[in-house]
Amino acid sequence: MAVLGTGTANGGCSLLHAAGLGYGASLALDLPVKVRLLDKPSKRELSDEDNLLTSVEKSWEKFGHTLPTVEFYWSVNSKIPQRQGLKSSSAVAVAAILALCEATGNELENHQIVDIAADAQLSAGVSITGSYDDSWAALEGGWKLVDINAESAAQGVLLESPGPNSDEWNVMIICRGAREKRPVPDDFVPHQQAFAQSLNALQEGNDLVALTWNGRGVIGALNDPRGRRLTNDAFVNGARAAGISGSGTAIAIFSPSISKPTIERLRAWYQRFDDVEIIETKVFNS
Image 1: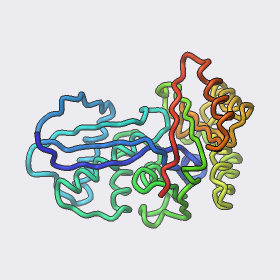
Image 2: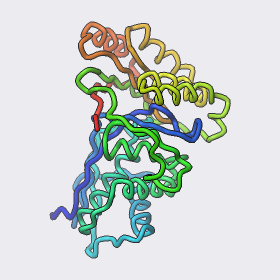
Image 3: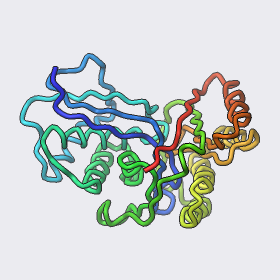
Image 4: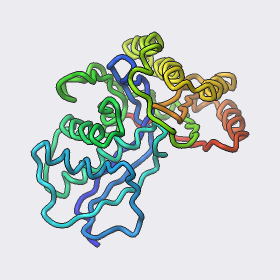
């Protein structure tokens, strides 16, 4: 079995949901994805219920690029829980495009990769905004504040940051299983004040404050009272920031790496719940 091309990317968590105000920002986390193009089917079963990889192929051609001339098959190895708001679709799309670049000898600018990834995710129906901010984080690390109504990914970047220092923060992800449904843009309208607070925090360089305000807005949009309780539990137990990521259901919790008792207390608290999974990771700085 020959490998025609390989691409890697990573997941992330939301600092500002793009459906709130038309501006989005996602922070990259050390949740890796590897996508390979093979000349024979992989022994690992491929899970692509949304046909995202087929959409990547169509978007690749739509943007004027040629697919490999030989028959090829996809292989995906992902550490990102799917459909929980941790940017799995963006990471897979970006990694798949990088694999196509290697397989076909194409050298694309990062903004071109993000444009293709956004088009593929919209076509596959896995994003309501194009997830430009998610794809930037998946590709480069850190975070970028983007205007989703800009004409291109390159023109949409308004601010960028390497993100909180990965050595200084522990990131605990509370995974609650795949979302049952995706919200629609109108769900976010009544909660614009929270998203405006998140945007202001990003403009002031307070990315973790933004994460918390964004989470409050998303909880309202999703009408998720249990998410609110679990997020509040984080602050009661000493977390510095916490909020639902993406369109749910996962909750990202930040606490200082130096504060071992706080981390242990948070871990012990969420281990009490039988229906959640805890993932501990780090920020992926740009």
